[in-house]
Image (cartoon, rainbow, N blue to C red; front, side, top):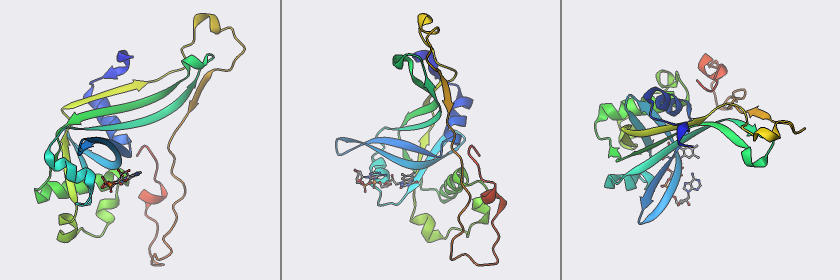
Amino acid sequence: MPERGSYDRDLINSILDEALICHVGFVHEGAPVVIPTIHARLGETLYLHGSPASRMLRSMRSGDEISVNVTLVDGLVVARAAFHNSMNYRSVVVFGSPRIVTDTQEKRDALEAITEHVVPGRWADSREMTEKEVKGTLVVALPLTEASAKMRTGGPGDEEEDYDLAIWAGVIPLTLTAGEAIVDPLLRVDVATPEYVSEYKRPV
Ligand SMILES: Cc1cc2nc3c(=O)[nH]c(=O)nc-3n(C[C@H](O)[C@H](O)[C@H](O)COP(=O)(O)OP(=O)(O)OC[C@H]3O[C@@H](n4cnc5c(N)ncnc54)[C@H](O)[C@@H]3O)c2cc1C
């Protein structure tokens, strides 16, 4: 269904920003690997982070091309014919050569973006990162030059002759919802729950 594809940059960005996590595909010692991880976008760059010990991130030192996918499932499309069952979704695939971020400011900006991507408002409220923590985190940048989006919306597309059948058809919408925050039992008693936690919702 190539007509569902798009290179619209705003659409690509909105899907990347809404998705909590991505899946990174890379080749390690000749074997294809796919690993889930957190991402964040800053302008035309996608950032990943993790432990310097991570095989995924270490393997990116080679600069070999990787791929990243994010997928948002918006609904289950239930058609009259099993053949026409589908899903409403928005997804993005990015290809590119990763770059290890060495500039301290870019690294801090990326770590802030990753923190804010998950819980907006958290970076300014967190204990500042130490030099040791920044040094101890590997950050990888991927240019968003080769990126595509694909999406499906709407109801089922059954065969003309099947619309008369007495079989239910439609869409079951799916959304990601946050539950009530669980307070850390070690929390100081004088610390109130911030609004960005109590009011947390996806998409942010
Ligand atoms: C929602 C989510 C968010 C995450 N965010 C981050 C992040 O931001 N940064 C980060 O560094 N890591 C993140 N992780 C952990 C990440 O998926 C890897 O486990 C981690 O980075 C270690 O990767 P590695 O290549 O060193 O794995 P290795 O230690 O080399 O893995 C060895 C083997 O363990 C198995 N394995 C590794 N990871 C997983 C996994 N997640 N699930 C099942 N099997 C696995 C595979 O078989 C793999 O070949 C996240 C995981 C999840 C599920």
